[in-house]
Image 1 (spheres, helix red, strand yellow):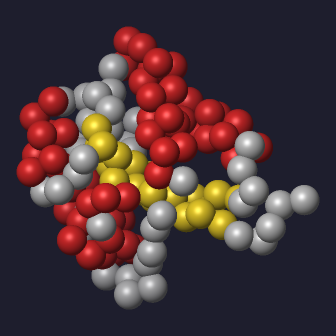
Image 2 (spheres, one colour; image 1 turned 120 degrees about the vertical axis):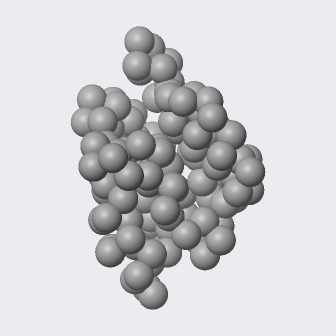
Length: 132
């Protein structure tokens, strides 16, 4: 029986196909843990500003950070200084956006490859496993 402990994961990703593959593998990862995952999934920069940056109670153990969103803004509006760049895995398909995150202190990067989403998501899950 699992302890009633959760690890909170913020996923900032607007591509539903990518998200569904990550969630499928995350469900398998959770089976191997002694705790549960609590997920917060946001798909646009306005949600990040309204529900995360402005929420004094928001805390996350892991953050998956894409950059572009369908509203034309940037998910990089996330207050990395507040939430901790050490908890972030940058998952953009654009190398420059991952480099931008690294300049802000992010050390973990997995370049998203839409042609190989399964391999990409395996790498993301491995990075998450290391952070747990």
